[in-house]
Image (cartoon, rainbow, N blue to C red; front, side, top):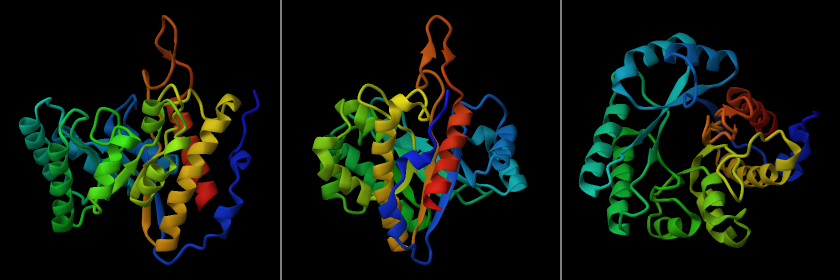
Length: 290
């Protein structure tokens, strides 16, 4: 089957945006779903052209990870979170894990991506995650981004609006595929909220979602052309802002394994190659934005 190239999603207006001095794009590889050791993952990420990796912080793998990062000259971003259903212990875990990731003695992370709070915590409880991370980022110089993620504080566009309006220092990891899934739409009727989120975005998870799920089967398949085009239209705006500001933008190619990746019935076999799709997205971003 002939697969479309990214020329099919050309953005002529984007070419008119001149990048101010200081603009850079760093593209990260996801450890999520990789079938192998951390060392093998870092080696493959470097070989395939990534600038760095994003991985869930874990003290257990730290020594191997940082040795591999040094060997292959890769940057790193960490995912940090708490998972407890009650606010008190959840926030304690969140704070402890984040401080361990930022304060590690090996290599300063490029950024921290956080899964903040829960969708059922109160506004006041979830706001404590914002207040803590804003202050801690100032103290350490490590940017901390809150991901637009289902089950978390920023699980949908309407739920995120108040946090964005009342917390101007809140910075985002934009994974807009979640919002498409939650709203069962391509957000056509929530453009104001989407634009506000885009204006606060410093990191992107470039997975393509659709009205009925957080991940299309394969972004190269023609049946997903409209969904891919919608996501690139959003990402174009993010990149244009960073180029005009002369600031760094980071991006993670985050197509995931089963069950994010659709599977064949009765086998749990993925319908496409996760790593291959993510490399394709990395190359598409480089071609489009660099």
